[in-house]
Image (cartoon, rainbow, N blue to C red; front, top):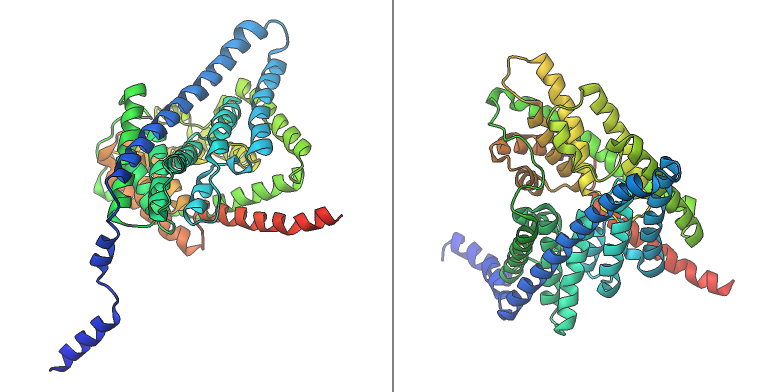
Length: 467
């Protein structure tokens, strides 16, 4: 026996299983799991789509009621304050009274549940997140509906396993992940991004196997079909369709990615700073929490009247930006203003996400960057809107640290498939720089904060009982 054969035999003796066989060995779950994944996707699609419809209905009704019924009876600003304050109160009250884990985005909660560290009280999460989200987002606060939809989708996955009394942990885990994928697919009309979000962003928690991958794909696809049946097949963001830019301009997209890499690290730190600041203000006392949230909602009701660009998730703002409605100076001011309003709303613990506000921020800075580039290099056949789209993906990649998901998500949302190379360049630059500066993924950061606060709360409970 040669030395090479001895080394090979010794190596194989210490390897318990071939990696491929180990992967395939997990694929022994019955076909019923795929059927349940289909059911999870359908339900997640229904809940996610009608959540969007409900938020839009509340927002439109509030505005119309304000103009037609109340505006002539009391000062318009006062009516706007009262209505938005009332809507925000509903969201904050439901969260603090019935389901504390429904605060904020909800995605860290699903990641924690996939790791077995957080409960999934679906009977509380789904109604509180749905109704509370309607109130918070309907008030005009700078929040997105995508995080809540992912959390409700994951909760639906757990609900289905409880209804069918599934005990197998791998199956329960697969359906929880499937619900999250279905929720994102329904929120953004982006089925492939829903799959990749679970596979890439949730990779530390996701248990890879053929059955789990299939379940996630089926759920995402079925949820998206439901969304398209109800809301149509158009892209979520209606934007111009751009042709590929000149290859010589790719270094400009890389430069934009570097800037977003630095900003992404700062943005994530601002998020946790704002959460800690609000925690010091309300100290988890219900009265202080409700008063703070209600006043905040009222403030955004007034802001909605006079500076609507600083309110709402910002998806509606993206087409206006790329159509050239604003100059570079105003875009940068708006960019700074929306950073502040995003931190105010998300840091307060309102039941809403940060996806959409991040995309709006990326668009704002990206388009302003494009306007400046266009002025410096007029000979390049490049539209500032290309940088706006690249900015959306870059900020997502830098903060969430899921570049492939960011690239696919932006392409699916805007239907700009020709910009894939600039998007890859920008997102790669953003992720590499964010990693160099020690940035952590936003949802992992938020999960660690939640677990830390939960430990502190559990530690203080005996002291409170003793006193």
